[in-house]
Image (cartoon, rainbow, N blue to C red):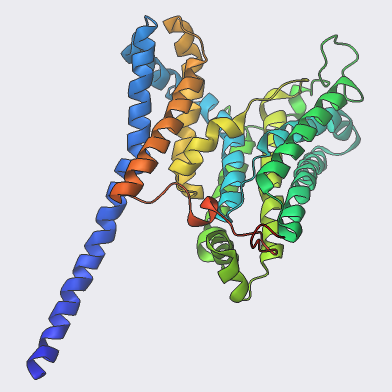
Length: 387
């Protein structure tokens, strides 16, 4: 017995060393298999498509890198990152709580229409800093209002948020078109669009650059969200609710309140992206216009494993692809739609790797447990189909 007790510390020490090495190895495998592999395979498959279209894939990708990262191209890529980071953050917040907020398109488009529509009058009536604050809060209010409906139905009635968020998105897009064709229409232009905001009223540039401060705002919000989600009690509550609402309820967490708050914040962040984009880049909004940021950035959100900080380099990668790829496609003589094909290929290979990786236990799943299935809702639990 004595010898056994004496030998035990050595065994514990050795197992502790193995446990320390194992997570590090697991993280390396996770990054290689789940993050780098889908990107590499998508670029390779995209190169094959380019070759089939008669273009040189190596020259195309070289142009993408050069045009998206050097000189003015880098500043354009950083400018494009501003709304994308906020959209990605909005999706991350919702997905971490196990909520499928798919109303990102409508939230962005309606907020863009409202902000662009009232911006000239607000800027004329208020001092510049106050006008920016009012416009930002207006965008947040629009997004929060849109998110409140599916959030409340989910929390108190157990209604599937996929359906309700998509319905609210459709309503929001239709309302945006009505506003741009009606009260917000520029009477001096035949095409339905809002009045163009004067360049002097747009968001100021970061000193020494041609990148507007919206990029800095988005970056700071992403960093702040990382610490809230990783280091605070609220972040722990969100993760627990996302993993298992029933366990969260037994732990004393108000699941309904968390569900509503997370959904509202998620849509508000997406709407704030519209404020940054309208006052930082476009200056006006047109009817039937939708940049589709949510659809384009969705695969990269899961590649980042719902990590706010992890989303920064991946969103940057897409921004470089979008910025440099537009001109690269013209030089190669192919349609710019090839960029959307590459993004779709990333999603395709993610699905394939998810199936294979889950079977072989290679890396963490892209989807957290709570995103696979949530029994009931934040406050109502479904049993046998009843609510």
